[in-house]
Length: 278
Image 1: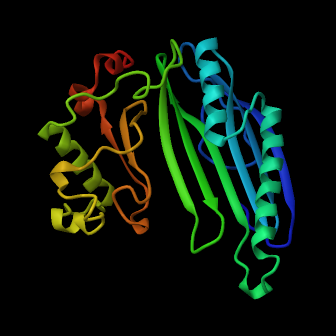
Image 2: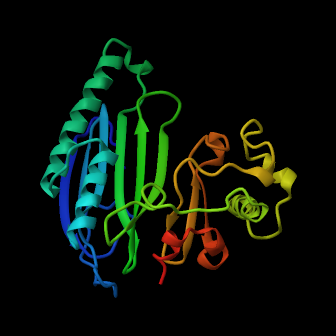
């Protein structure tokens, strides 16, 4: 996100894409098709507008080609994520303009009566929707958002969603995903995953050291970590578990994310989830 007090800038760009990106540049070039049957193609739309009161940054990959069931499902889901009924790439740019006006009006409502030295930074909102992974059988959507409406700092959210291509249903929501999650072996997977996130790779982190990064009231024992509030999601190589800010650790611990290879997580995937793997 570009932060420029007093300067107003707006831009919207669209580019056809057949493979997901996770950057937020306003110019996106075409990429070569990947070797996937039933490939879902997307059109990338980016929008940025900012001044001293408000900042909006959108990077949305809008599904345009593929089987109707999955394309319709993804388009509807994106609209639910960003909180707007988006029906086309052009509507995304219109949404960016309306969001900018809302944030700017809110900023004026809070700070117009204050002295300039008492005013905080521009209110801001970021929506990034990308498709980093897809195979013949599933596609994963990754969502990143940032909100700031005054105060010490903003709030970042990141989450992934995996959809079955055959019918557009979401893994973990409409399709059962995990089983036997109460077993000690599954608990060990979560524990070692969280440990790997905080370890620097030089030497193993002890349980006592690891607990210092987590909420004592939320994590009674490393051998009994709760599942993330959001469903895990598939990459091409494994299953990603992601704890959002404040879920099991303080703000300083950030978003806790780790991937478990399919070979390790396979016994804990339902038959429906296993069927999505090659």
